[in-house]
Amino acid sequence: MDCIFCKIANKEIPSNLIYEDEKVVAFYDLSPQAPVHFLVIPKKHYSSLNDIDSKEAFADIFSVIPKIAEKLGIKDYRTVVNTGESAGQSVFHIHVHVMAGREFKWPAG
Image 1 (cartoon, rainbow, N blue to C red):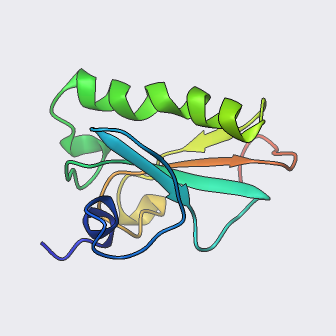
Image 2 (cartoon, rainbow, N blue to C red):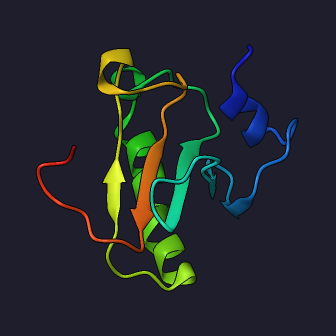
């Protein structure tokens, strides 16, 4: 498989890794949209949110985000999951953007 996030998860290419366990990894985004911007991905490949086959996989991703936020000293943050090309997904391996360090408005955009 030629997936850049699978390669990061398998340590075939370098990343600025900030968290790893047996199911997920987190690393800083190469094009940050906030002072703090990292991605959390499952090690198992799922193309998008639509492809996750178990609630445990979803829980694996989201359960580590508060731990990483605490480790980084951030209390308020935004999480974003883009699902599909027209929704802004550019890497087709599910990933959660976690952004902090600036004020966010709603609605986004």
